[in-house]
Amino acid sequence: MAFNPAMLANLTNPSSFAAPAVVEGGRPRISPKQKAAIIVRLMLAEGAPLKVATLPEDMQSELTQELGKMRRVSRETLRQVVEEFLGELEQVGLSFPGGLEGALSLMDGHMSANAASRLRRLSGGNASVDPWERINGVSLDRITPVLEEESIEVCAVVLSKLPVPRAAELLSKLPGERARAVAYAVSLTGNVDPDTVHRIGLALATQLDSQPLKAFDAGPGERVGAILNVAAASTRDEVLKGLIEQDKDFAEVVKKNIFTFEHIKARLGPRDVPKVVRLVDQTLIVTALAYAASVPDLTPSAEHILANLSQRLTQTLREEMAQRGKIKEKDAEEAMSAIVLAIRQLEGSGEVVLVEPEQ
Image (cartoon, rainbow, N blue to C red; front, side, top):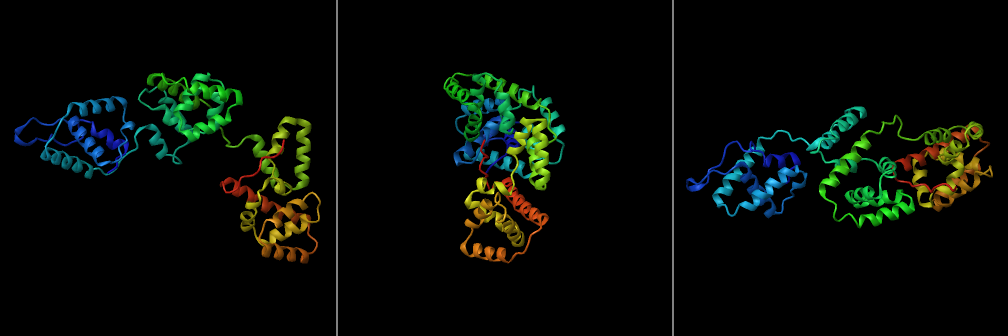
């Protein structure tokens, strides 16, 4: 039997049971807290999953103290308490997520980002809210800039509170010298008390929630690069030339985010070539390859594609390429763009990882 945090909270609530159970022989009635302790003890004995840590700390303390006070209960008492508790569960029509983060997760996609951010800011000073639950749900790209301005000791606490995979990824995002200092500082966190950790979490969560919301997920350079990816080559070259004259640094960022047919050879792994080809109509593949084969700058990418397909498919494509007449530049651009879009689609879904462009 597994219970969510809301059901667990009800265990220590005086109104959890409709009426006090009376033990056999006219003995004193059992209090709601004692009933909760009996249920928890039974579940632990049966090996059932219990997320007691999701309860407020005062409830956890009271429940543990009650478990420490109790000694034995008769089978009849156990039967009465269990039947009463199960009767209460059968009356439950809906269960709700415990805490604000659970509620916001439930409402994800149904409320605006501004409203969610406002709720988080309003609850930021609430000591009963677990800030680390919120911090763990924030992308590392948002956490990293904040940590770069914090002390080494605070970074060490954050690293210790995050799940190991996320902590490792976060550490890799920090500069080498700072990463080493933070890793060493983790060894000094053994005596940090829970209240200090909670306050650090509250301050960090408040700081993260105070960051202004961005209208765009991607940065300016990434957005311009994505647009130029599917633009005609003449347009792309003209825009880049203008950007270099106006803002060389921004132009470099844009260039790093540009991925065209010419970059396939250097950035698309051999094993990923068949995935791309399966997504694109064969007529477009033939058009793109036939045109690229006649353009020196594009030929390496065309050969890269052909070299990493099955022999039968490669032979078929080469035969169709040989039969292809003169190709208009417009048709070639559309065909090559279709291949590039397929690669970007696979990259977005995580099925393809492109090699980072050389500096």
